[in-house]
Length: 399
Image 1 (tube, rainbow, N blue to C red):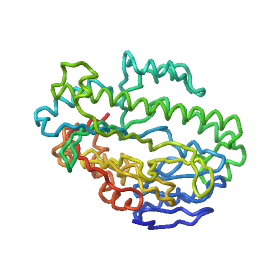
Image 2 (image 1 turned 180 degrees about the vertical axis):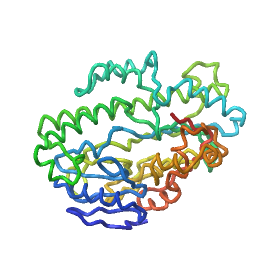
Image 3 (image 1 turned 135 degrees about the vertical axis):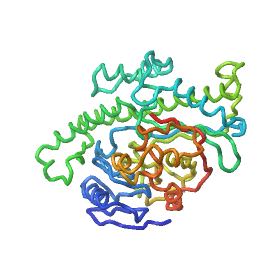
Image 4 (image 1 turned 90 degrees about the vertical axis):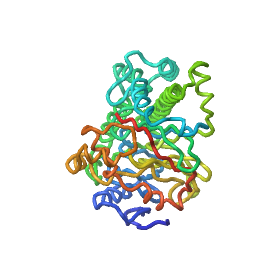
């Protein structure tokens, strides 16, 4: 579908939905009022209120970055792998056992590895550390590399709705180190604005200007966190595939042989909280995607739904008005606290029928009804992406 709303501010805000809460409208206008934003802001079909900047927003800037527009989960994103194995190879009675084995293999929630993964140690040794965090945070990052986290992060085993093949899917970011980096630089940006901070519609929209030491420091830490998040997902995906191979009985050939027998035919990886330097409308810009994926023509991406509805693998159409972007998921339609007030564990059981997952009160805030309908988001993205595959989860692991 084409752009449904254009909001007026210093620069326009082009919105791919007409379902947007008033608070998010004001937040988008505030972002678009910043003098560093150019030539417009794009809001995806899953847009909703966020902290500092709206989730589902694409914010292009000239010679500046706003740390709060990136958010605190720097580099958060998705990873997916398609196997050649039919979903029928997993018997219903095997699903609970596989879920528990995944949870034992990959720490979830606030858990971390007592002894870091070997791949995590190698990556940290090769990539150093952000400048803005303590040695204690860096050491914790070593133990959290290859772990899921909580909130809306998840690991899934899915079945392709069309050909019945098994997919593995996961969603995570830069863990505590990303949040610590973000918090430090957001505070520094506010301080660096001086008295000009009072003129901003929201203090969280303070920015760093290119060519300054603060900009260079944040940009270096930002890129490090984005790569950390990518490696985090890579380590988890390797462990997830290993557990799937074990569940299918592919144990005789060792780790590498196990994964080879899964017959991986497609891999998709994408950030959806990040900054990239790109050229749009003839200008070199710093494009911040907070809750949006890059969807250049032919590029593959992942748009997940909630823990009971399924996800989509998509191919970008390169829409210039969206800065070659697309939504990052279903998008919340109510806060976590509201979801906990309105729903019970019994509701969660009903809404996740047929999915092997936790169904207790501690994850009620992730109930499918707290999210927009993923089918509506996909329909409103028809000029942004085309659907490659629809997936339905049979296992969902939450933190």
